[in-house]
Length: 55
Image 1 (spheres, rainbow, N blue to C red):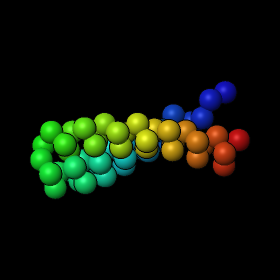
Image 2: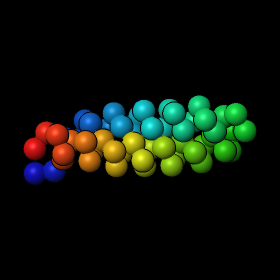
Image 3: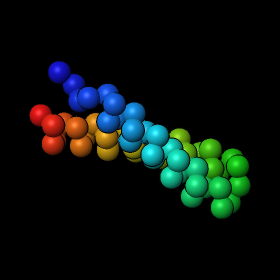
Image 4: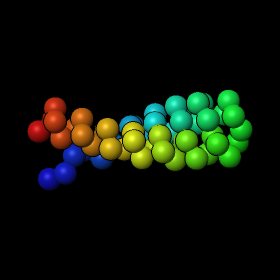
């Protein structure tokens, strides 16, 4: 069974928010792009955390 999806969702939310906050210093387009990258990184980190510590 895969990692608990709630942790992946939490990671995606936090990663996207941090990415938007960092990218907003430059502009809206940059904020969007960095937010997408942050969402992907947060999803990966949340899944990795769940696989490592909860199974």
